[in-house]
Length: 214
Length: 214
Image 1 (cartoon, rainbow over the protein chains, first blue to last red):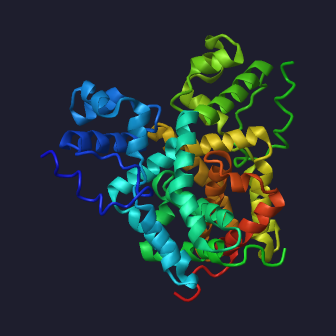
Image 2: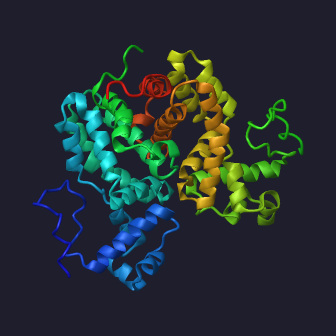
Image 3: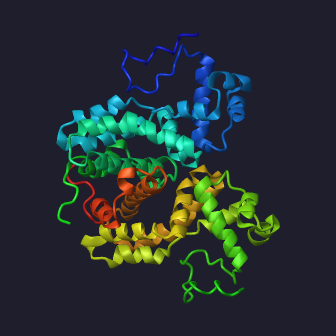
């Protein structure tokens, strides 16, 4: 029971980029607490979730939550640990032919949203707006280190950081519309349809001239 | 003091569309509480803001907050009352020449964000993700009635509702990036620069063929 999940998807030693590397022989209980925390943070936001409410929901003793994670901030940090391998996102951006990057990224992000765990982590991330300033700072720094900098390095385009930020505005807005404000007219579309709609936007942000004319 | 603000911007009787029409001879104290509530909801999110914390911050007796607004839900509803006249947004969309709608909407939304009151109300709206389900439902219904339906009627385009939802994903993502996650690379741009960057996206969503090819 103890080693069941710890090594499943850690993959071959992937150096400093892959997540925060905090899964030492995770027990079933630890994973259960983490999954419960992820769901509560996504559903209630940071401030209304407590170590105690997570323990109650997971049906474990609150002292176990403290034992495994220490503080709510650390539990949050781990619960919203990037729900995807940044390397996989980079592969979508730089592996696709230049003319197909927007479509590749759209398809990748929409695919992630089908996995409940990913969806909850991404939604919790957007709701982190409601967090303490230091949690926000931490999120931004990790985002910069794990996602932004490698992408900027690989994109090999002018204004790479701006391009990625613009693409992120579209992706965040889409996740918000699909899973937080829940616009009916978008919820009924298939991934293929949504991809066709937003890919040209991402494509322009990532690979085309940004200011044609003006 | 009593009638100072009540009639200032209610304008000539504008029927059912303009906001929720709830400003009966607002006193200075009522306005102060409302402004304080708007700021707290924007900074802390819904759940961490209380009638009591608003009263403390506004330096008034908590019973006054209850007197003027009844419940936190009603205060919230009023605090995030659309911070702009939906008619003004419609004028941007339908008043601009068809080829300039994206630019017109981008400029309008970015302009709104310069007004602290508007910015706080819009940010509080996005953070409403953290609210109770019935608050969310209420927001959605009001958005549908005051913004969506009039725009759909006026846009005179195929798939008007889908077009507006897509434009909203870009606008929401941009507000989030500028004022919640705060991407440095976007924060340093002028309105003109940001408009030039996102206008083509809004233009395509609002007025151009949505699925060229595929």
